[in-house]
Image 1 (tube, rainbow, N blue to C red):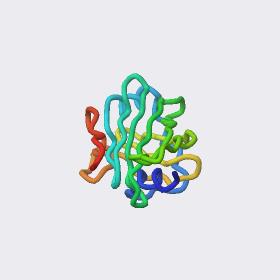
Image 2: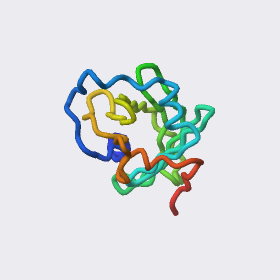
Image 3: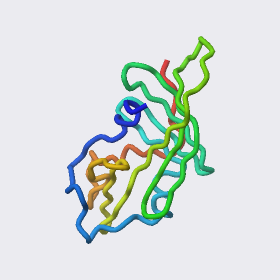
Length: 151
């Protein structure tokens, strides 16, 4: 599971280990607006954050195709978490799904800039620069469900 989640955090410009005081947690409504109804494309996968709180994703990290399904929410203090049960696709041997795994991301803002890190101890990086840069992770969020599973 760690391989699947690790592929999500594409390192952008690294920020200091701790953000300076002028950064502040993104409001949960702003975090919700970032993700709700959007697909986050990763290097080897994609995840859809349904407006009703459902989560679905696929990943080919480590060379194995896996599907995840679960729930997500925007919590207080700028944190977004999703909990998903991941299983290999297709699972022709009749194996039961793995145990649910939770992944959380912290978001802080300074003006129009957004920094993100994977909790509990990921490194801060620019999720969205001010002004935005074409390489920002923010631009990997696309409106609608675009989680077509590869063949």
